[in-house]
Image 1 (spheres, rainbow, N blue to C red):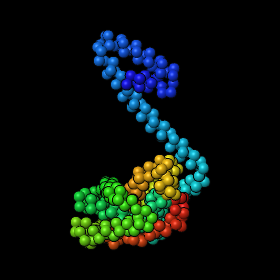
Image 2: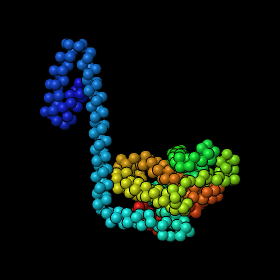
Image 3: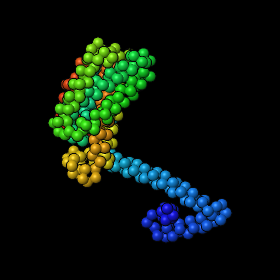
Length: 337
């Protein structure tokens, strides 16, 4: 332990630093053992070791953050035209509810929801290469989890209830994804896709046939105050914010170390694992994140409908549409979604 403390004090890889650290530690140990007691130097060295380990952990975290920031800065510079185009499109979308009719704004809601769902799906299907035919399971699960919390336990409570329902619904979706991730992600290709389709069908039947879930009778979602906006404009802006958040998340993942690991996983998972890529951890993380984001869109969609049943949110066309959108926009490329 003495040698390790000496090296950490003087700096790893520095002979002169190690020499100075040894001299400093020898003087301190000799002096304190004579003045305080023979056991004090050992306690002091242990405290120095713990403090240095904590400082090393903080240095490592700062280096990782600097590395991520550098990669994102280079990505923004390389794709500045896409970023500027996205910002211009976002600014245009912000004024849409003020110039279009209510029906047209409702169409805009569906367009934004389609874009957001495509981005949430591509985290798993595009980046990791695990195509899911059952992502509608998380739309329905998030919608019913939030709806049951808001109607049965919170009894509405306006926007606080909505935020609590959003947090609870996304958490339930993430927990459900984490629960099934280990067995289902052992499958690949069409087997994984069919397994996810089965998960969606099982959840839909549970909602329809278990009375406590209320899927057969349906749930009346609490109304939200519109801040002076028409209801269709309110949900339009909620979907716009959600889609923007998912787009930023997808961009950050795609252009950092995780995105590089996911690209290697998508091309050849076995080779990526042999090269040191933590494939299992990346797959589970993308599965859980994709499920939570998909559930968020399901919650907003449920509130926009006002009344939901299992058949209105567990729709197989949602899952198929996510795949089609990614095929049209080039799967795994966030601007295309």
